[in-house]
Length: 315
Image 1: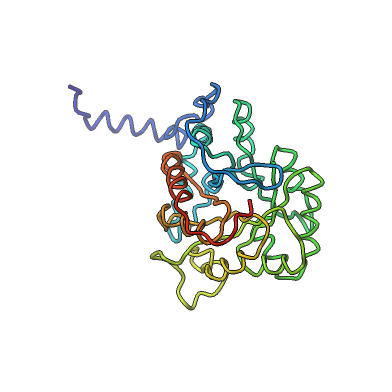
Image 2: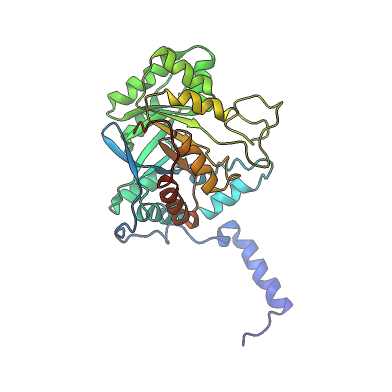
């Protein structure tokens, strides 16, 4: 039986830990990185095509890698996510995703590229869909960088596209598509506001795919009637008009990747996945911790096997 911890030993241990600082509270992620080849996939997921690439209907979101928590007023959650997702844990998460049939991940070009490259060196086949923003006035550096780092698809982030549409600068948004395609990648457009999709369709931009936020308002912190912006005032909503989104997207011919389908974790996966797929999404993009992947993959299979869907699959 272990001896009880006396006060003197406790104070000594605490003092040593404090002297070492925060690094003592977590394992060295570099030493823990796996180097063995990836195991063979254990399961498959239904897939769809965008251009020449085939993607799993469930995609892995990158916000948990970057620490973008959208946790309303819980200010510690982003720090907690970053502490949990060490390099080793991210490597494990990518491995688990492939193991259960997920073959695509989405993240901002400045977040995660080195993780994906390590994964590829181990034999991983994860396809990277990169988000990019304009640099400077109309700089396309991030779009070109994403292609150079190994992305198979690149899209303007929702905030970038929304801002360009709001100031009437669809020419710059069209140029992002040209730059991406010149780099031999699929070219997309992200959006938080439905007006961005409507404007792009009216202008005939024809991206290879759209990403659009999409979730019901069936959760506790959903927006109130007086919250009319595209984004919730309290980081609590990313789709102010889901019924209208479904109606507009029904007639959009490009593949649609829906994101924020769980309203940043506020909606249970079984409900959020079904809502997105039944109302027209071709793919869903979901941030997942390692321990959520197997269950979410199975939920996706179950939902897709029993859909009541009216929008034709675009991918």
